[in-house]
Image 1 (cartoon, one colour):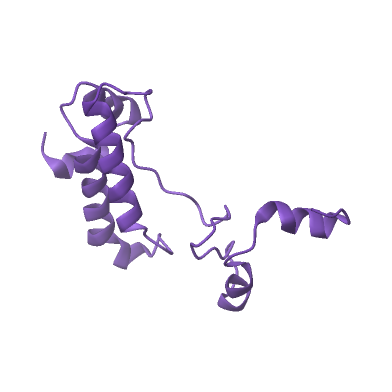
Image 2 (image 1 turned 90 degrees about the vertical axis):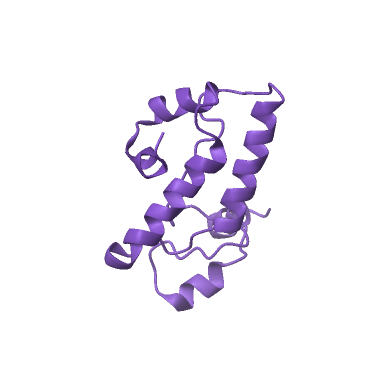
Length: 121
């Protein structure tokens, strides 16, 4: 399969190709990262691209699949996480301005919820 075509596959199609080892998780991840690189300057859709983490997760999935440890249809599928979800160590702005994002950077969501609900964590 031509790598540039991978981002246009459905998740079901890509999942089946990964399961059959016709496309590797690393190839799929690289295809999506290449597409982000080619287009994000126009759309500014990604606040933070975790390139190293994505490729490392893809390598781990590829190794597991090679060892016959395929765990299901989402195994090896690259995903993007909306900035609305808190991720420790990754800039999270929840769609707000920079000042707020600095405050939220390493906050643990459950502690934040408990704090604002009047309970203690």
